[in-house]
Amino acid sequence: MKFVVVGGVASGASFATRLRRLNEDVEIIIYENQIMFLMQIVVCLIFYQILLKQKKN
Image (cartoon, rainbow, N blue to C red):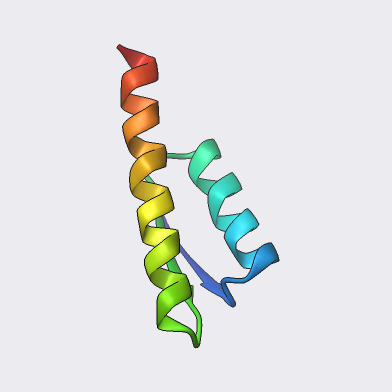
């Protein structure tokens, strides 16, 4: 399943994070004007996935 989030500031990022917690297999696309913010989101999602894998083990 794919979700598109328009705007990555507080509410968009919160929604994407909550969605990832509910379903790890969902594809999330975030549209935001600021490139730096998108890079921060990608890094946070990578760390979140690493923490999930460590928690499962």
